[in-house]
Image (cartoon, rainbow, N blue to C red; front, side, top):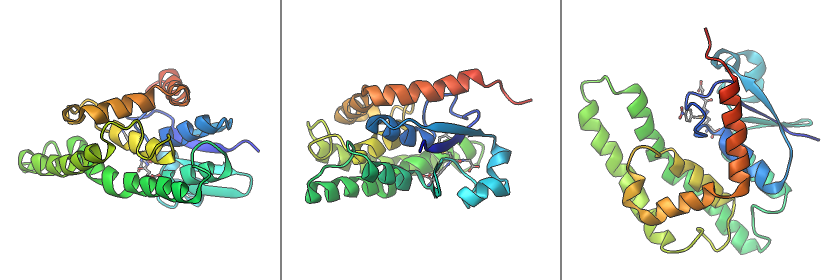
Length: 217
Ligand code: GTB
């Protein structure tokens, strides 16, 4: 059964692959699972039909027969559990890879997301100039820690896993900020992820959608 995912009809990132459908696409490409995409406008995301799939009215979602999932991390875990390629077979190595998935989603991504949101939504506030360095310091704390742990390894725990996939997508949200450039091993880590053929296919597919969709209005 071909899974169906949802994505922005016209992504606000202009096809840079920063929205969270990118990680689901990448996971599906890594395991060689074909999929279909249902594109949604912002208003369609808030309609009851979509809220049946995601109560928060967001993308991505994942439908496979009678199964409907939301939360990109849960979707990637589902894909990784159902197909070989994203989680190691050894039980302890698998548990460590899942730990990195949670670390990406709950320890590293939140400060990156908070900073990014502030740069988009709070730029005109009187307190923005004071708040931004505070948010950036929090990002630097996590990046410094992550950089120390990664060292000169290619991946977080021996072989590429769903943990790396989620971590790379979280770090990509910093692209263009200049922040990642202070951590050469993290720059190289993200570049390694982006060089994977499965990443390229996922990236090109979402970019093609952006390029094919005219601006609304
Ligand atoms: N925790 C959920 C998950 O991981 O699936 C969060 C899902 C989420 O944030 N979805 C966003 C969404 O649907 C898109 S990815 N937003 C519409 C809404 O809430 O109405 C977040 C995102 C949006 C835009 C950019 N960008 O422009 O760079 C990057 C990431």
